Amino acid sequence: MKKEELKELQRIATKIRMGIIEGVYNAKSGHPGGSLSAADIMAYLYFKKMNVNPENPKDEARDRFVLSKGHAAPVLYSTLANRGFFDVELLKTLRKVGSILQGHPDMKKIPGVDMSSGSLGQGISAATGMALSAKHFGNDFKVYALLGDGEIQEGQVWEAAMFAAHKKLNNLTVIVDNNNLQIDGTVAEVNSPYPIVEKFEAFGFETVEIDGNDFEQIEEAFSKVGTFDKPYAIIAKTVKGKGVSFMENQVGWHGSAPNEEQYTQAMAELADTLAGLN
Image (cartoon, rainbow, N blue to C red; front, side, top):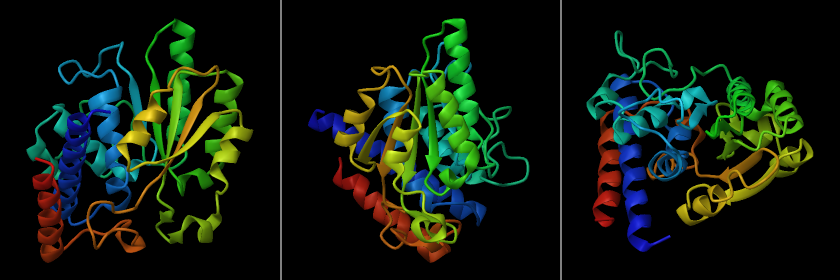
């Protein structure tokens, strides 16, 4: 990856993180930690990898994305806004009465959202159905699903994985945001899903583990999408709360909103990061 391209992706990811903080602060509720951890992956998908068009969000030829961990809606909303699907100012209306940006994604109201989600474990099933439909009708679009590592404690995830491998859905890519923290503590303490790589391999996936906050590794992993005869799982090791010093690796920020002082500090840190990339 060229240096300027790398810096541009880092700038985009930082703007996405700023949008996350803006939304959650104004809502006085939401899930910043697991949204911040996934910002780099989302930046790469929507600004480099996926075939999407903000001018035609329902284009039948578009690639599909399912945020299976739907509580991380702030990262999807901020990504879509920065990509041009709707006005960035709308991020300030997160979770407010009358806003299209509710606590979980709504495919009927939000441009660019391909699947309503939030009931953990179900998003990968929807993505698998999309991938199967593409195969059935001879469509070329790719399907991506982002899961949380706590979410993969759900049995439905593995039923969908088994089905996807059985049907050889090589147009399906599953990304696990492995930040190692969920609402009650570390995933290893609550109900360990480890070893994640070996589990997906056992269910018939081509699998790779990467640093999900490193664009070079992200690009290397996504460059292989569609090159296998089976579905693909990218296990992305990330830092929960990435980009905001006092939120990083702190389980308390799974579902807490910053107060005014914390908001000011977080936005200042991200603004400094953005300035350093210009």
